[in-house]
Image (cartoon, rainbow, N blue to C red; front, top):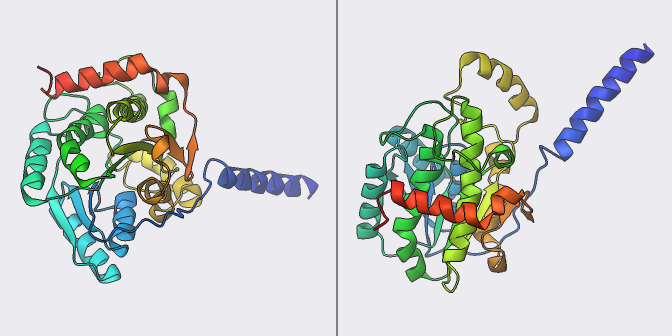
Length: 309
């Protein structure tokens, strides 16, 4: 009996330790108004992106869901409009696995919309394979597509005044390496970690290039969240992940809080380029703030997207 009680105590202790550290919740307290402002959220039709869109629409923002699946986007828009009463929630087609699609999206947006106040690079995946352009799918979608999208939209962000770029990374960036950032990896979790390291390095370098402008940028760890991120993993991996996810992982509402913090919190402009988790700025590994590596990643990304002269 004593052994059983000790086991139960150990399990409960471990559970409470996890929910107070790795799976800790936080709440955005930012109060910036969104009326009259325009937001783009990649992958805004599901998960964290949808929860973020709901909050920003509730605050009166004009919210554009940039995603691939029209049907999912339509369902999300209907739900958000019904819940918030905000009719300014729109869909624009974007496939981050295609640089052509990214360019088409940017061209369409710049022709149709006169301002952009907030770009949330939210979409991401864990998968194997390659993009339309031949890059590793995780590097291509999680980093390169967002890199090109951001660069193409920066002029409009600067015009609007006080624009922000929020890019979802992950604590998994800590397991990324500074080498082979653009290669497809045989182990796709390693490729995922590398792509999340790219997100942090991209934000670090972007902040430097935005100095002197009125645009700021932040990278975000949303927490360990129960989303469709792993929808492309194998069945045996899902069998392992799903029970743990249901017990411990945050829901998308909780996972959206740090994104919302970086979007809405006033006074964080001096922290441009930094990494946030649980609605707080946090330190990153040395490799994630290496100036030379961040600059090299930018230059390589620029070349791969055909932007370099």
